Image (cartoon, rainbow, N blue to C red):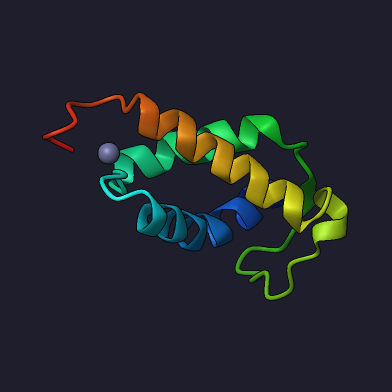
Length: 95
Ligand SMILES: [Zn+2]
């Protein structure tokens, strides 16, 4: 199976970055729809890094060096959160 390793890493860190952002910015939507939008935007900002794995392989160790470093990943996620929070693709009162 081919995986985009960048996707694995963004998926791993999105929840905690979003939680931290929402803590500092009350009212930030954290619904699944927005999380998917955030993930797509963040992934578009980061270089893909494809890896091949056998089915069932679990990534237990995150190697940031392969994808430009942890700071770059966190920055891309934060940028994406800001974009989605400013313009959610659904009614603000109805996630
Ligand atoms: Zn939302």
